[in-house]
Length: 200
Image (cartoon, rainbow, N blue to C red; front, side, top):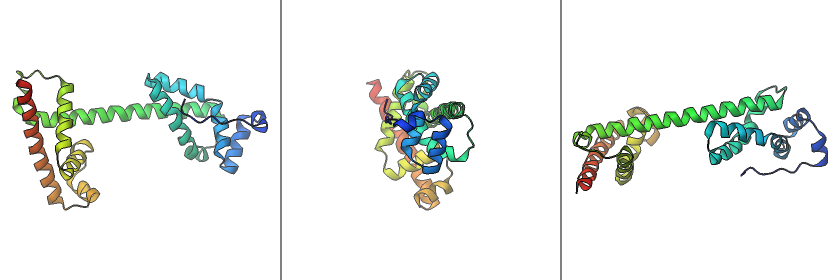
């Protein structure tokens, strides 16, 4: 695993979970927390693997959860570290899965919007696979000017309003609206070029 292995020293090995937990709360020593966490890393990894069904994502989650403990432990009165850690791990996995599902949903909605505007591309006669269409949209986005690309991503992908985009990018709202309109037009032209190239 990517997680750093903390070597338990003699006194640490003899201490139970609550003693190590209290030591960490008293000192903030990450090696102490690492020694405690290492006792249950295999359990954390097992839970993550169960939810993600992917070894690399499971390994990444083990690292993220350790970082999460640094901020979360002081907030709770933990009576049983193992049980508490299981709940933290489970909640982290569920939140990550919901986050990925939400991002995927937004991206599909985002892709569909531009493709629907190009009626020729969406005509039943066109049988381009969804993945190739998404790839084309990604390439077309990369060809946009930076301001247009940023505004479109924030408007359709992040679902921000004109005012929020203007505040984030420190631009006048009228200019934001102009960047989005011009960017949409350029995307449509680019997607139509893509369609024609595929017809050749």
